[in-house]
Length: 129
Image 1 (tube, one colour):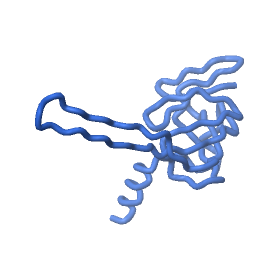
Image 2 (cartoon, one colour):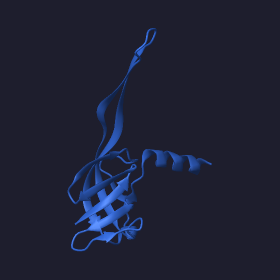
Image 3 (spheres, helix red, strand yellow):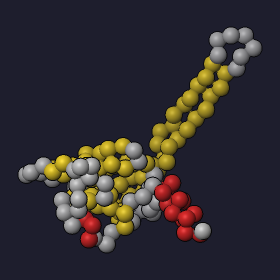
Image 4 (spheres, helix red, strand yellow):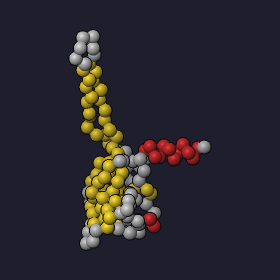
């Protein structure tokens, strides 16, 4: 059984046992998280969501919080009196192991929903007000 899930503005095709690198989630290593935005569930019969499959979920275990490879941004202007500039960036990522693909009953499970760090900061800020 496989599923297509959406997180961090990207879509991933996953099966049980797969290891994923996704945009940083608000979870610690060893936590279990659940993705509820499932676009498609496949196996013996295929279910396509409009836009999401109702009740479907993907559960995963957080392995670690990591950084991606360094991306170099280099700027050079061609004319006189110009400058050169080099900037580097390493994206924060979360390493996950998919434990289960649920075609139904995901809304009734007790596993916490996977949210990005921006969503977690926004929720914490709203709770203070």
